Length: 94
Length: 216
Image 1 (tube, each protein chain N blue to C red):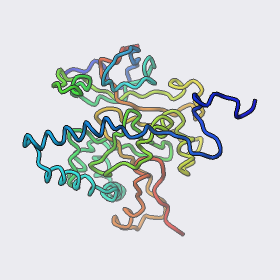
Image 2: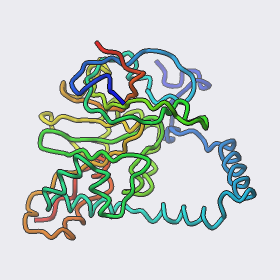
Image 3: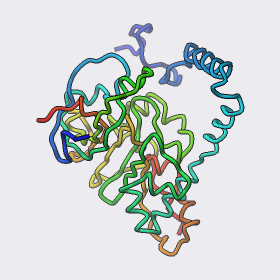
Image 4: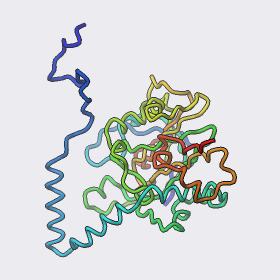
């Protein structure tokens, strides 16, 4: 399975409302980040959670975000960061 | 403004030193559902009561001491440490740990970086290595604040991270499980692996604390 992104790529988490078992927390939706690593293909939790197969697999990445980008009033240091796993169908290239 | 001048029905804080209610009450619906599914699985012969009991026993026998042994090995064995950081699943197999169906991601604390683990969506935790997560790890306030104001949360655990160190939060939201590799305390150069393991606490492997510093 090919990955659409490689480490270092700049991406944005797609901002959409989607009911059901979604593993993309609201606080990263619409936010820009950088691919930290490719985790690999994983079952899609959005169907797996409902007793389905989770197929086709979705490519999973770890994405690094600047805390100051996630929270404009963040009170820590400028280089503080957050890393989280995001499935490919929730990412767009920027 | 008078502190009692607000609408109590909508108040999200409390007075008179009463603890703030942070957590949802236990869900009767979820408990009933669990009971119903469990009884059905047994009636249909899918699992037996003894198998269920055994699974609970096995889970509860996992203790953070296992994680401490893994960390101590990484402190004394550079090759093992590199394997732990790059291929965590394979590295911990020699300790009898099977991470499936999840994958292990070990993150290293250094003089430049301090790592903190949280699961904002639920309570994902490296149970195969550390056992059952602490109650606070599952609480809504830890889960929401650890990503929002990690330095404040850390200071409430007594862990002050200096301004020249980066704080890196890991939201364990999907298929990886995170283990922090704490900094080996100074003054332990001649320590045995067994003694070093005594310095590695559960909390230091979640990242809310550093490893114990030996006296003297």
